[in-house]
Length: 81
Image (cartoon, rainbow, N blue to C red; front, side):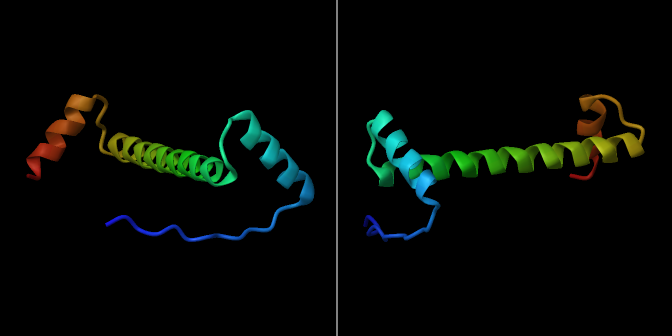
């Protein structure tokens, strides 16, 4: 069953509201669709940033263990399984 839509109210400076409406018109979308698209893009960017943060952490941990190649990391991971 499809979930019903829930109205969300936000307050923004008037200039931002005008820019938002212009962008919606430019993109030929209503404001709700533009917001959903923008939110999805924001979420994706956050997930990518988290992935890169974890990747950097993994690199630091691998270096501490003296691992240089992906094959060495994979071999260590597989040892624990």
